[in-house]
Image (tube, rainbow, N blue to C red; front, side, top):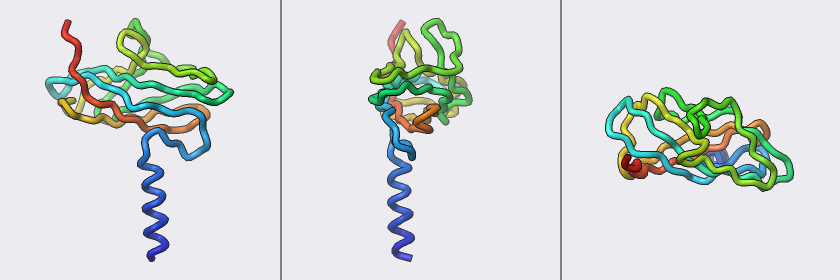
Length: 140
């Protein structure tokens, strides 16, 4: 029983670590940011950095932030993307005014201090987790 508990705790700690895939990978994600919201059902934007330290490119193929009914990867013009190439040896930044995550119909408000968990799925690296920390939205 003791061996089972140690194994379970070790497995949980690896799975709970953000930015860690089960397969060996040179792709990682930094924790990012998300704009705060006022009410349930609002939309917001999320931003994160993706690093590829390997010698082969990878492709971001899916994304999900569970707080939202929809999570869409969009370009600077708001056009939905179906994938995003992560070149070898490069950092790709999902940032305001550029490619970013659009979170629609939020199930909860994103308040000051909130942390929004998201998962990013890569063709080679598999599923990586990242967290978006709430920051005030810019005033227009």
